[in-house]
Image 1 (cartoon, rainbow, N blue to C red):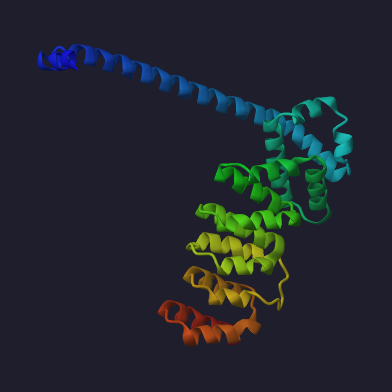
Image 2: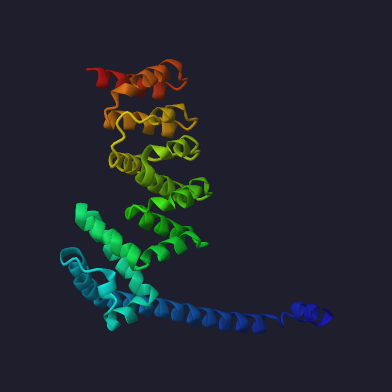
Length: 273
């Protein structure tokens, strides 16, 4: 300590300190440069592989959709099996099937769902639910919901109570897509604000279900979360659920929020004209 203090008093520390700082800066710059180069090379490699894989996948999926080819037939191709053993290929394959599934309906969509299950890609989606990264969890949830895996509902709805707001909304949206009004009770308890964009997504998920006079939608009007109440009013309006108007009238009469009261009264006028 005495020697260090003497160096400090005599200003002899300046040269060693500056030298060390320069070396540290150079080393940090070199490390950062190598990280950037490695990241860029990895990205370029992935883009190249994606193009190569997409060409193969397009041929396979065309056979699955239009020629009734099952995965049992596809996996007889040894070259395909070698690629299928790599995680990145399966990731690209899953994304391709999802894009196709969004654009096809009926029997074509069913064929894609069967391929997703038979190929074992569904297992990859379930594994993502166990990831420590919320982004990966969201991806797994979205995949399972896209292919209508209703058996995953109980696992997905657990994340509606997660700390991460985005994960909560993704889980709720997926649960609605899978089970419709069965998910309403979880929406009622949702504590975070639901923005307009997510409300549109949730309404879109409900529209895919023929909910008719199914009980449950009116419970959204009982929530302590004003954005959930707003969502409930929008759902009643969009789906033209005139049988729910008594609940809307009750809300308009008892709510302490002038904004909610105005929206409820406006909805009553719209659906009674």
